[in-house]
Length: 358
Ligand code: NAP
Ligand code: ZN
Image (tube, rainbow, N blue to C red; front, side, top):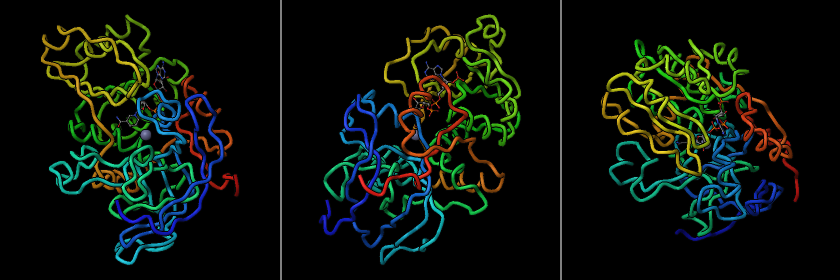
């Protein structure tokens, strides 16, 4: 822990208990140290992980909790040793704000798997203050320069915010499992992650099949770049897909039966779980794995270099998220709509709507 030193009084929105609606909260950020960047937050995307954490669905939420890890803003101030960022630059911060920087995973640019524990943007022990980290539902944030991403001015800043989590969480497994031309990919669930999964897999040249529980999303899925749409509640339609896919990305935020999806994989196919429900999925049938040497895997966000690669790819191909911009006082309603799969396809908070005082 470094000396706490002077602090900057600021404001955000916090959950104070699993049941309480989020509301205005005043707290302090550290003054930027030599390698820190202070960012005025313009927009913050709303991830289902924010809801899982704020409502205490995953273990370990420390209250008050300020969620938000899809942050876009402008550099307001840089520490004396900061290179590569200057006041006014458009920047992003995703799900991590620090890691040990010397373990094998960090050395490979896989900070999300830091063997000494990466520091999450919110609800993580804060090495600087000794408290807990507070996320992007706030006026400003102070971040170590290595965890600040460059955002092209070509991208709409509000619609680029979800690239920092929904984007990288789908990009990283698509790249790791080498999805591209000639690959048949299934995306399960059309929400924040799922719609980015479709756009990115399509841009990488794959043939994309969306599996959804919501027939009303069919036309949108095709417009986003899916080649086919399957209603996953239709057992006959699922059975007709048996043995057809190389890779499946499962983004669903609730426990569900994995077997119909595993069966849809070819021999040697891989199904990767990125959705992180609070309760486990029912165990899949072992024979569905054994008989065709299929794999069931998982993946966590993505590393910093890989996130920059994604952001640069999106700038080049003009890819952003489909968003509904909300003022911050509608965040609780947005959470309730997210639980009903009623998001098209990511809520993004316009931080101008933050109150000036609590
Ligand atoms: P989201 O926008 O709410 O989308 C989830 C989608 O899952 C829904 O739109 C819905 O799609 C489908 N779904 C089917 N049954 C559902 C049910 N009973 N309850 C909720 N959704 C259901 O959520 P998201 O922000 O994309 O996040 C998805 C999951 O990924 C969350 O669990 C989140 O915590 C996790 N996550 C993981 C990582 C990681 O690093 N692995 C990173 C970010 C988020 P259809 O209507 O098409 O069926
Ligand atoms: Zn997220």
